[in-house]
Amino acid sequence: MQINLSNKERMLLEDQIKHELICIEKYSNYANLASDPQLKQIFQANEASERSHLDSINQLLSGTLPQMNQQQQNQQAQSGLTNTPATSLNISDKDLCEDLLMTEKYVSGTYDTAIFECKDTNVRDTLNHIQKEEQKHGEAIFQYMNSKGMYGAQ
Image (tube, rainbow, N blue to C red; front, side, top):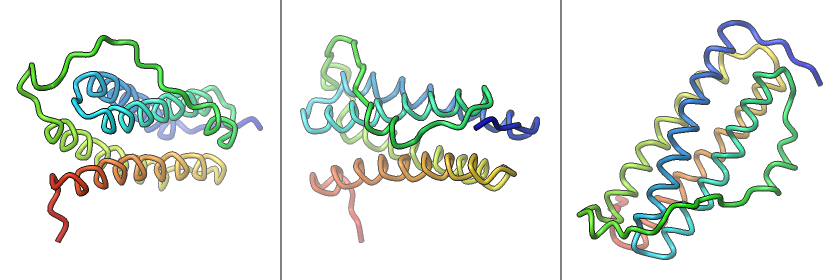
């Protein structure tokens, strides 16, 4: 299905590309810094998902509607950096989690704005799908932090 984007929609999607690239970089780097193997796995899974989001947005910008179910099945972690434990840099797993949780909150909010600015229902649905995945990333980080006593849910 071919889609036509307005200039405003293009601008918002280009901003989302920047956000996705930052998320990919953070998840890749932080997976290598995390000391807990469970946390490394969460970060690697989220990185793969962020790469899928980037692909989806690039498809939208090219005028094509992405196939969301197919992309979800093809996600794989692609982190190739060497492992440097966070403890050698005086960065705790909690610090990594707090930064990524804050990042996910921000990125989810920017998707909310983009969703409301899109005229095409299919584009809105695609961005809504991505936003829900961003929220799941935040949820996974929150659940990890809560289970390790790093986040005091009241």
